[in-house]
Length: 223
Image (tube, rainbow, N blue to C red; front, side, top):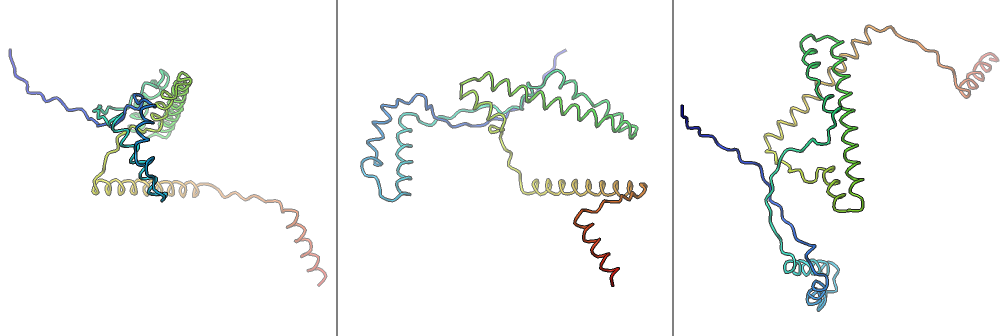
């Protein structure tokens, strides 16, 4: 049996990076070229003009010694290699979630929420230990430390430009979610308060309040 399959390979998402090879610059040659620029030969007196000329002079020298290069890299999903074995096993709580959705029992909901809290704690501890170990292993290598910091700050993530209609829909969905959440919380609080007996607590008077109350009582008795 023979068959011809026309399969289209999905094109991976890419991103274009622009950079300069700063490490390849010779400091002696850089100093010699910057002395030939206008910032040294005829610097302006105005501060703003001086800053603009300095920026332009440095850029011209950099274009000679370290021209801008372009590189295309793939944009993949963020790796979860920092997840430990315990964190990975704690994430597998779908069985409790399916059981709660099937029974709608309060005990099942509490068990599911307890599993979620435990999983979050395990994930946070695993992530913290992973990045602390990477920072410690970097030692005095500032480039390696900066790479870890950029990963923590999500500096290399590619932001997706939302269309106005999609952004409006996201805002509407978020507002609807928050409104529904607040309404459910208010209804639950009202239901619990209706079934809870009122509690009256006698608060002790503060010394100043007690003293003023004593003066008021004495003045009322003398009238």
